[in-house]
Length: 393
Image (cartoon, rainbow, N blue to C red):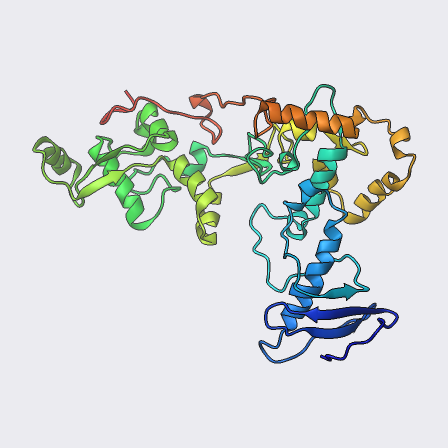
């Protein structure tokens, strides 16, 4: 790197003067444009400080000058660099050095932040149904509580958990692991011991248990805590309860379906997720048709497509769809229902949201799940009496 100052930047060069980020000491450098440039040097020499903390930071700052202030908070910013001047630098984006950490909700759009721009597009320039308040960009994200479909919670699929899946062989007893979906080893034994304490016969075939008992064991949302006498037979356990003997420990029961859904949603183990997934049947969400978003967001269109349809297109098709938008005649030729919001309408919608509170979701529907024990699925809630000892009576 040279410290020699030149009066004018050479043609086709990026001219950096007085870079002082981190360990840089008033560095001056001219970098060719339209070329692959590599910064080399020993560890700590200032490669990243020059490339990312200085050049990229300034390029990003210039890019943000064309982005609405509302959108800027959706994108990570690296700050303003400590440098005297940078000339010949165009607005730019950069591929960061570290790897991303995608989750099951990640997509190409979310990893590259392209989805943030699409959400802003629909929020500010989408065609809204008559009478609908303008939505925030977050309302178009399936990864936020205000945008996710209330039925599938933004996953796009619902999962059914049935008795036949959890108990593939009803001729087995609970002690013989009739409930195949239960955890293995000690945790499964713990659940069986809890049922013994609660007076359930774990030594008769599953099919011979009363239906109310079977439904409660599989589908209850209750989590009763009871004394457990490890190693005792059912008869010995009954005697210990009558005599109020000191138990081995206090055990908390979890229904079979509740265990499956909790493990599938929260476990960090891929093997655990794979194991419980075999007891679930997945299908597209009937409320959002697999598009992962609430209905208010899906009712907003741009170029004739809702955001779910646009997000599923290949990039080349997206480019073709958006190409006419650049034409001045786009707004005049728009023939889709609704109208693109003007600046005055946008301001009025923002004021309405503020009047309704910070969340701006006063028009959100009140969606509730109706208990339906007979369906015995993941979307049903079966919650019988909470009385200890006989919850199925």
